[in-house]
Image 1 (tube, rainbow, N blue to C red):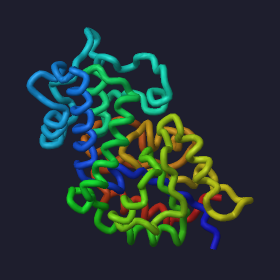
Image 2 (image 1 turned 30 degrees about the horizontal axis):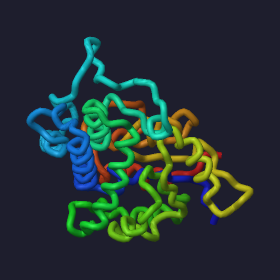
Image 3 (image 1 turned 90 degrees about the vertical axis):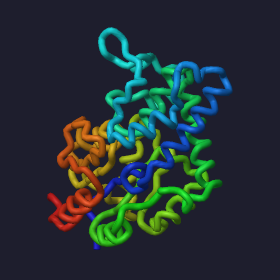
Length: 273
């Protein structure tokens, strides 16, 4: 049976849940700040402590964020001068914990290249620690939902997570066989157009590419995961954990359970001709 639809899924915050990955990232940033004598810019707190409190309060608008006179956080919108900054610009408004860590790191004096290196090092730390010893987990029913969806649609994972040692993450989450294609190092949002083009040809038929209006993209960051697909006429679902209200998705949901219902209804609907 020809699968005329394409489901794009984000990883962190969508299929990979738990706060440990962000907190391990914060630990690496804290270590680098201490090494360079920059910890003084976060008086009385560490990045780990700030982010932990943000998660407890379910709000990313922590008092440690520094603003200019116009109310814009300092360093946001500064000119990107290297590839890490171009691919992963400092984001505002914030939509997840990773973005909060990056903003705090930049305001304390680190570069986006430093943040990128800290992120990759934190991923290695998590594996060394053992994912089973953290709160990292897949949403309940994710594996079953994706197996059912693949009967009707091509399912592709698009993630900024590095390809290096990524298989253990999928194994730990029970998602090793869940996708037709996994695109790592996607460099979203800059790399999303290229990732979408690769995904549209992942159905196995070299002559058939999924039409843009038959694509559903789901994730927790509007600019990274959804904006490009929305502009092309696809369907978008935003998991808005922190209630930011950002973007103009077709569906805004609070958690994976609501996302699953949307995906199921979409996959069972007739493809538009």
